Length: 176
Image 1 (tube, rainbow, N blue to C red):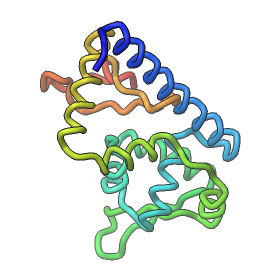
Image 2: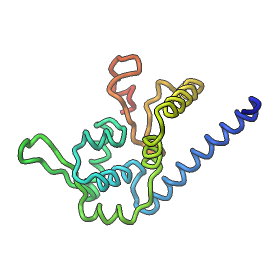
Image 3: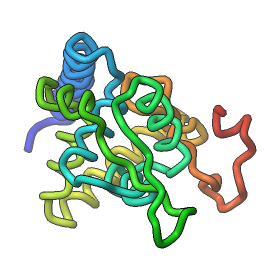
Image 4: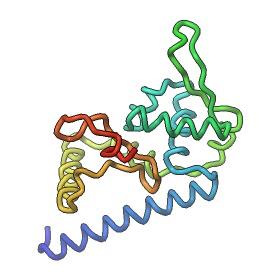
């Protein structure tokens, strides 16, 4: 496969490429739409799936529902989505794109998060496990295991309800 120095150089270069690509996708999306990457990703998922409940949208985006609710609040303020209560259960809310949201999706570029998720979903489990272990090791090397995961190039925090050890996170720990 190669000597250690070559492998490290290739790994660092590939990490640089990933970070640059994410940055470029995000800049392009924000310039074209005025939305953050996570906001654009959310409306793209809604457009792809049609009317969707918050928990399904969160699952599709691999985010916590609380994170998605914050994104939806901002999209609703901009008039890009509507929240509808179902007739059968008024507590159940469905999210749909507004006309303005549909137009924006048609004219918007792809977002890095969506491309990454779609690509990962197509990989074999063994490959996913290898990538996951490698990224976990990089997080450990950086001493970053306690840092709440932010959305890519966004202030949005995807704060889980529990710490890695199972103890519930405080709002301060979650970066909220």
